[in-house]
Image 1 (tube, rainbow over the protein chains, first blue to last red):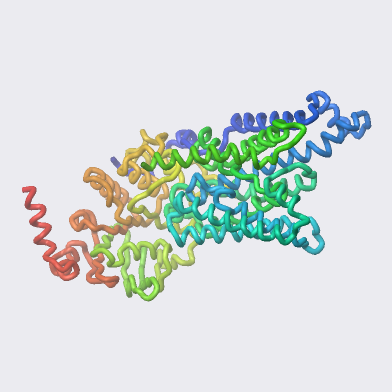
Image 2 (cartoon, rainbow over the protein chains, first blue to last red; image 1 turned 30 degrees about the horizontal axis):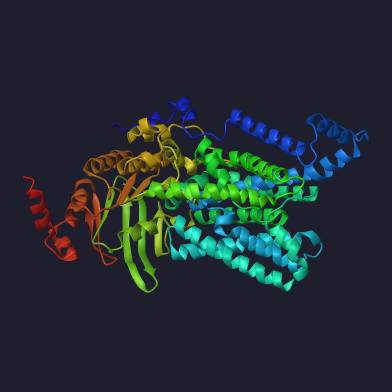
Length: 361
Length: 252
């Protein structure tokens, strides 16, 4: 083998463009993901306790945009004040939770890491419950107390869990993560129960909220979720290469020039913000961040340049379909969306855990 | 010959335990420095300090510039490292792992790097081109180590640091890895440091050696001078050369 590295540098730029994993998602793949997301979105707007044909939906939206009053008032109300904000919130929450899950799994090199399995969602819930129970209010921003408490609590939980896991087992192995997640979730839930006993008049509302539901979402919620996803999502997508490096080997990440401490902190803050906001608007919706990246990896592989954009779309689709099921199964009664995601997620969780154990064996 | 790396008065302690004490050495272009010594002598700790992976006192200078003050991305263009074993968690392809070696050269918000042929060449040099599309989870230990060697070649550093790079590899892979690094060193402006347990490998491939004993320098200089009975016997507490001669003699 001769060493003509320098001499050959300028020779084959064309070959380099064909290298595996060089680019992110192809335009075709982006289009397919976007079309599936839009189709699911329209489907979720059409279907519900009152089915509205797609044609009617377009005419209602057209009249809403043009300002004409020709639309049926009931359909107008159902579509624009109930379903549109709800489906938007569901899609944005799904995308945010899935992106958070993918980022955490990459950062911790653990396919089972997720807000719910790590206990971060429970931590965020505690923050939100404290705000709801005792009325934590930020001066000038009355509605943001729950969100800020959930975000802070999510970040604090993340730090506690990771420090604890490092102390117990430096390699952050799957078993340690899961055990700490279970213990931490139980601890958080016990504190939540304790708080609930102190505020008997709010038990019903808070209990239903903790099960996870996006019913009653407003356009304001959708705007907050969209802003958080835009900011945190852009930062996380910007760190795709760093997440690749972390998920290969943390020491190797440092060797190739990744600023390990800085990247880890930034990702943890972004994930905490996303989980905190999602939990404060929709309660604990478990397993979205676990299931979605796992499914997407089968299609795109583990490269975060492809994985992260793909989980945004897939997370949105997964949660929109889960919400549709929650609305449709026992209609006109609704199930909390968290029940559906937990049901699907638990099965996938067992499957991944079994596969990772058998691979190791 | 230009000096690439200078380590001055390096001390590393974990709590009250001194792991490395007052170690100083320099590395010139074209040199391959072998760090040798018994287990716990502080070899890997010196490597960690050079890679800024542990707290230390003293100075590590690259071409006279304190490495502490160099950003990780810039440092990776000067100093690259190959560890003793890797366990990749996800099914990345060999090409994807090697391509990450170019991370330090990425530009812009999304760190997109301009197309260049370093990755292709690194794959070719290490004989991994055919396996570029294979998952790293399907590779043997030797192939995985060559994948990361290709990554560090793609990184194109000036100093290559190897922490027991062939520890888990069989003889054929040991020979391949050491021969590849010998070829790599022939390019001007390059140097290497290896932590090695196998004294015969150190003697065969190194140009300089640093013999460590309980965190302190026992001897340093040209490899054949340092790896001799005069110094080794005292550090290892046995007649090293005689024992190695007996081992090798069994093959004759």
